[in-house]
Length: 192
Ligand code: SAH
Image (cartoon, rainbow, N blue to C red):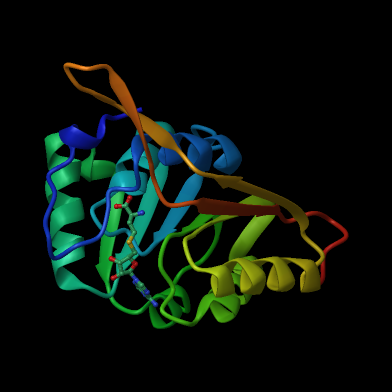
């Protein structure tokens, strides 16, 4: 796992997803070295860089041009640019152009989550995984309901990481926001 401080960051772009959360997302994504990964809402590139270290190929999309450029800088920094296709645009319109993939990571959706999941599901290979990282209550519910409708095998994990802040007086534990990681596998009994 890459440390948070080893990502180039910008106040204009969210991310990177914190190291401990990236760890869980990678765990649930089960990336194999022959896999194609689609990262929707790549932000700073936290999950794009981690995926590029593990997968055959990564496609990263963000509607914010500054996010695309920051992700590119982080890929160059970690010598992984040649593995990644970066696309600036809205997830739903870009996804219509894509063929198939094994893993879909969703870190941003701007209200289109059910559609992004449903469209992604159609292009997801059998046994493929979709992993949603959610900070909003509404997104969690939408993700769970959409996965259920598609008859996918569902897994939900919520974590509240507390991180030790080392001071002269001792180590002060500082709580972070709860994050929910909702993941689902496309199985042979799923809807068409
Ligand atoms: N996982 C990233 C952080 C994601 S922040 C990291 O580790 O760095 C969420 C991102 O999703 C933002 O950059 C936002 O611009 C993007 N986003 C939100 N909705 C989108 C959509 N519909 N299409 C494309 N990108 C979107």
